[in-house]
Image (cartoon, rainbow, N blue to C red; front, side, top):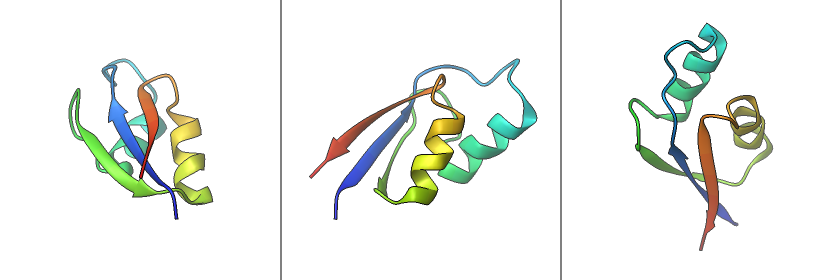
Amino acid sequence: MARLKITQTKSYIGSKQNHRDTLRSLGLKRLNDSVVKDDRPEFRGMVHTVRHLVTVEEVD
């Protein structure tokens, strides 16, 4: 199964509460934090919600 490396590249200051909660749910606490998650529809949906704050790359 593919894995995704999700990195927070922009600050959540000034963004909606829903976006802040989504970043927290992904495990991102501060700028330049990275997490590796399985490539599942649940995580893809979360990333889509905060796509302007994060970058995503596939990891093998």
